[in-house]
Length: 87
Image (cartoon, rainbow, N blue to C red; front, side):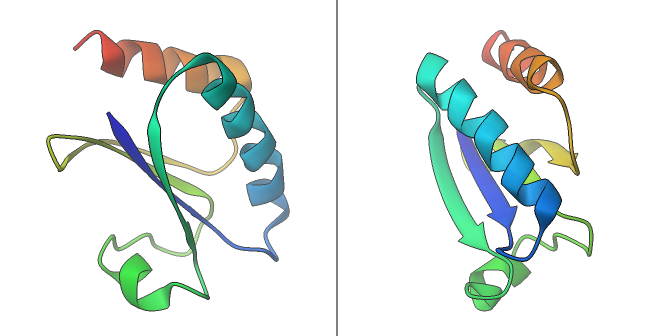
């Protein structure tokens, strides 16, 4: 599984979710590509993230299988990861 994580330095919710995601990465081995909404604009555009951040795009075999937008609890995110691992 690979995750494309789109955040921005000015986004308060992104800071919260970065902490949550880093906690998950201590428990799970997930390839993560971190993109900044402003600094990586050309690459970010390919994923059509919309205006609400952060965006977590879960991929398997280079195909999007799940998109999570906005703030979610650690419990919600770990459940999503678990479900996708078991597919």
